[in-house]
Length: 542
Image (tube, rainbow, N blue to C red; front, side):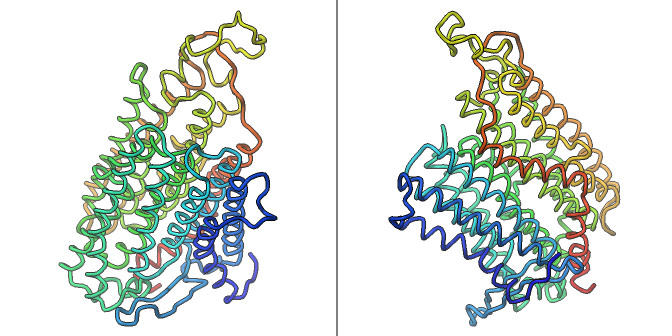
């Protein structure tokens, strides 16, 4: 791409991690007199756009300066001793696995900040909102950039508090219960995960993730690996989320504000699956091998369970919530990611990483669209969206001009661009070939067709068949949603809706474009991940 000095690359990565943290602190300070604009609220929202924009630019420059000929090599590395007594180091670096997640996080957070500038969330002071958004970004970016187990844990935990407050203070109905459920599930999982991380660090004599991956479990006994994988895996599975540890997710998504749902689905869920690939696969391969069939079994149950839950919500008369439906669809989609990881093959793991990015783009777009739909109609209830009650709308015989009404409840007629984008997001989510959702799920299923040596092929062929059936269920509920919401259940006169606004167009276009680009040119992503995955599975010896 472009040749950038290594020291500049190190600075860029450090800025990407630390910049949002400094921005969060600055957001709480009074705005300088010349930058207040129309109001202090507008100034702090603009500050959020500026900081996240600067971080996104730094992440893009980092990606352009990345040595794409050697994506398996850790680049832009910084390694400074932090706590010598525990051999804990401030160790940062990126490779082909972490770079796409870093850029995705920076992009989604910027789009959320931009969307919030034009559509501020209803709730307390925007100052706290922007500070929490930036703190959330800092923790997520650090999770993908740090190369020390204890730093990974600290970054992993850093996102919990801001997400809790975003749900609890700016969320909708049931937000308090949903926020508590989110924090309790994730904290309990994290306590168990910390014990596993400490066990690995103490037994191996180092917390350095690169050194541990190169060692490939040789300094850890089989029993230590099994215990560590079980402990760490539980913490990661809660965040992924894996069935049956997923029950916090639908409530959190349903109650969260629009940008909270976008970041929760688009970024936070990826932290769990990233931990499986970055830590468990290379550091404790024998222990992971023991649990791989069970992980795959839970994954495919999650695929079917999530799809059946969505079908139940999409049914006419079920009073299903569209946000809740998309949340349950995430359980199914992340099941494909976990299935790919469980195969312990380059094909499956590459498919998992691809599906991670695709899910972030597509589900982020879907939650933006559902948020916009709720802003316009005041509801996300599927029955109401498919067949609005005439009691909720003014009579045609009133003073409103005729062109403010549309015959038929279909979103295609009421707001055609919004309806078209919702249909695009739905068909991308169901894995239509040519869009990003297709490749990850297909590669995960191919990985299950021929899993790693010593894994039961007959068991994984069964898992593959169940997963393939899950894709049919996914297509079924997504097409039902499109038919009901976009085409309507009946013809009647209803008010037109405001179509896509300019700021919405700006915020959503990158997600649409990248979904198409990744679908048509998968090599752009697989070319980064494959060499890094090959080296990771080989224990850093390639």
